[in-house]
Image (cartoon, rainbow over all chains, first blue to last red):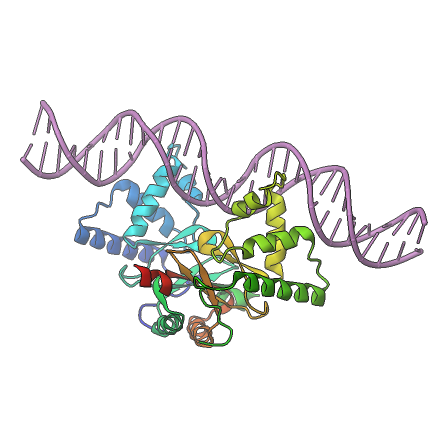
Length: 162
Length: 162
DNA sequence: ATTGCAATGTTATATTATAATGAAAAATAA
DNA sequence: TTATTTTTCATTATAATATAACATTGCAAT
């Protein structure tokens, strides 16, 4: 396992710490880039980080509006776009849903393991897979730009449970 | 390149032959399994095979209804489900669209190269990638079930053109 | 203070997908 | 054959996901 892997959370993981460090990374990155982490954006990032399972845009919206606010779909989609653009979240294409990015944000080309049982997602970055894909692409005369690699299956906790 | 790769079609490729062989495979497979390749299903398969770029369900529907027919969405989705179930087409998750399966249908775990320019898709099957993913999954304690691997980029024809 | 721009708000609508129910057709059994 | 069952297809309605278009707000730079 490389140092950049983010494992499945496990029942015991300290989510307070986990979300805190996500915020710190986000703040540092925005400061660095002169991007504005407005209250709205911060709130959406927080909502997404409250779960290790991807949330749909309308799930996020519902949570945003839980206290009687009246945000509309374009607001959440715009905000998600901002977070995506800056690599603070990932979109899971096979679920039309969004999950926090645990990595340094320029480390792209992530591989996601998605547990069909608990719904949690682990993000990993593997040299070997990247190389295998590049090799295959080269043989096909293809120029890789945006890989989508989402592996559905079962995480250890879930298949240990049966 | 392994023998199971389906390359990008190329400007000169004989689409008549290409679609014919797809039909032959589909017929053989259905005969083998006692599945019924009804006129409706055959028609949808044909529509999908008319393009090497994935078609959305509503694109398929429009083409089905081009002669004034009045098929409704559930009809096309049901038919697509049948074709998916039997491995005659693939769903491209990152596009919400469908493309013909060029392979022997039990050869699963396909990797798709999707050209963002011409929209065409090439399906490949690489041992090396499969192994790299398994290795990564094992390290993460993850049991692989359904990999989604869709690589967006540019095919040779398109970047040769500029 | 004004201008310009980024962020957010608002309304409407487009796109993708499914639930629920029933009719028709085909396969199977009696 | 006729009855029975199952599969396929039709129909209506609606759910879920996403964006277009335009208005407003608020801050930053001059």
